[in-house]
Amino acid sequence: MRGSPPGFSRDGITGEPLRRRVCECVAVPRAEPRVAEGIARTFRNLEAPGIQPDARQLPSSEEVLSHLHARGDLTILFAPEQAGHNEVRAWLGELGLYIQEVTALGMSEDARPGQEGLLNRRGAAILRDIRPVTRALPTSLLKDGYADQFVQSYTARPTSFPRSSGLLNISFSADQFSDAAIGDVWEGIQPATIGMLRERQLAAALEGKDLPSPFPDRLALPSSGATPSTLAAYLLMEDGKTVLAGHFDGSSIVSSAVVSSPIGNPVMYLFDLRGRAASFIASACPRTGKVTHCKIRMLGPDMIEWEVSWASNDDGNLAAVELLHERSFSGLGKT
Image (cartoon, rainbow, N blue to C red; front, side, top):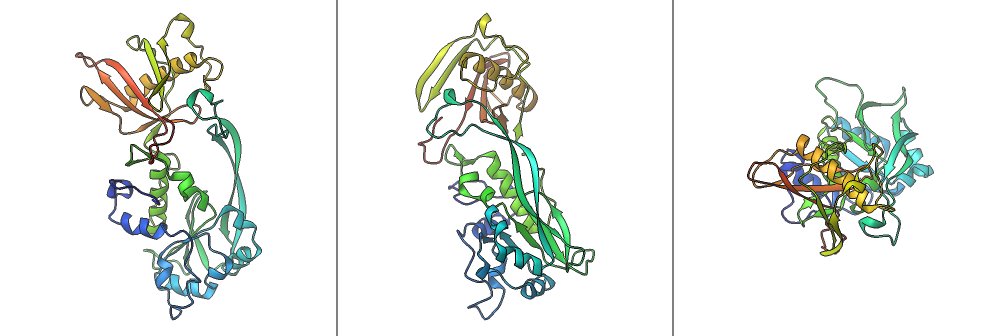
């Protein structure tokens, strides 16, 4: 996606050679100046997604329908606040579309400003995600296609099978495809799980394929039931400096309640995290050698994403676990 560093996997993300074209299209910071003006009123620029366009940059409804009938595709990513712009609503109305708000229960990672570091986190917050989506009126010349809370797709009527129309992809979630949302890169080359998922979602929309599952398939939320006796010590480092070290003892044993914050008792938090890591390894990360680097990531109850590696003894049993969090592309982030 935008800001992809050298070495970032290509076909491994979308599974198609299309990825390079997708990324080059999405990389534009804004939509091109009014797509149908200044280029002999052709649609050569409509193949590239428009990012947060204003009303002057939007093609007319007649141009959109003509483009779709010619099997052309158009993808427009609006910012959430643009759902309240009268000009945008009027443009959608000309296409026979309207905006509807959908609400869903969500979880948010602790993001208090100035409170950096794992030990300063209070845990995840529960919230309501309120997001505008589009729908087609019964009288619209557009037919509903596949959709989720991020992208809604439409084809031009009359419909046929196989599809003969191009695709119109509309989204009011441009913020979810921005660098701020998906720009985290681990070890300089590995994108965060949400970045990989957003790229698959956008690639599927552009290709007219079924959208992937809304929850990443490379992320697992394990229980804390395991109690590995071989992992008796802990070491917490931040930016290469030791901030906490010691051994687990009887006072570290936790109840069945979820320990979602290190504030108050960081050792109990690490004890719970140790159990989750052991469960994750047992269910989702089989041994590949003396040191195993897990292909998928672990998600804690506090919505923190962990990269997991583990070492085994001569018998193949768990001997040590390494959990990494917040590896930034610049190398300046907290780890």
